[in-house]
Image (tube, rainbow, N blue to C red; front, side):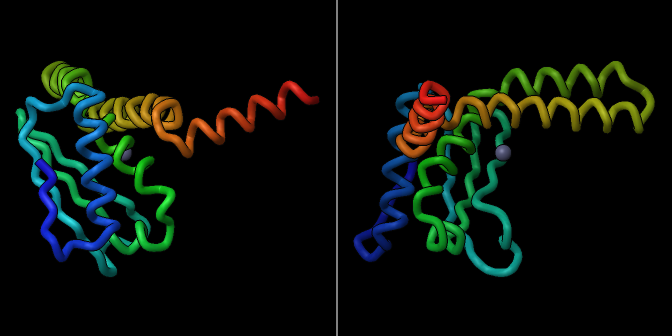
Length: 147
Ligand SMILES: [Zn+2]
């Protein structure tokens, strides 16, 4: 779980609040979570990273980007937790590819395809859950109606 200490920044607390909210919403309570706040050159360009293995989820959150773009906090948490939601189907797909595709080049290509498809689904679903995304979606729809 996401634990915060008294001295943690409001930003960290916000991240943990979102994590708790979406763990509940997506029914992901059966995973064990490790959450790390990171920063620095190594993380430039990345909001976060997630690694899932069995029932263990490790989540790295880039505090630098969160500072630059606080509105992305909720989107980032939802994005990463949707990786957890889709983990089993993605894992099964890549396991099948690993088992049955002998040619490394083809295997890599198919694995990249699965990854792209996963992100395509995540990019479609994220705005349906986040308040920022819903706002954007509504304004887009309004636009369509007006034209
Ligand atoms: Zn991703």
